[in-house]
Image 1 (cartoon, rainbow, N blue to C red):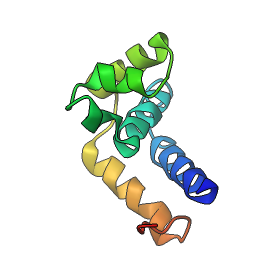
Image 2: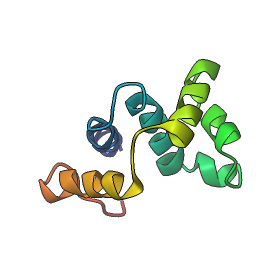
Image 3: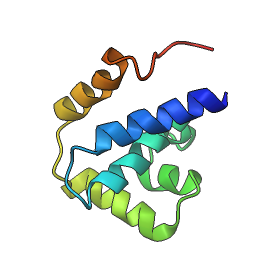
Image 4: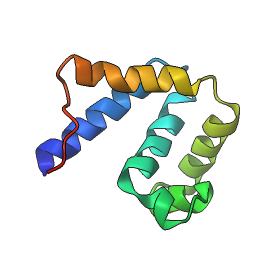
Length: 95
């Protein structure tokens, strides 16, 4: 399980590395909220989902700002999400 967790962290950071500073950390928190299932637990509510991940309140506000005002596109994020898998860094499979 520890190996899987470190791969997820590595892929999240690789996805967010290409976006501007200020947006990248917020996106890392947003991606963690998605892959950890917190977003589903809060029925799609973003701010409670971010809070449920355990990040501090300033980090929740930063992630919220990255979502609404950050310089990124979903197509760009999806392309970067696939890149590490294609390079063999992570293989998405059920465990």
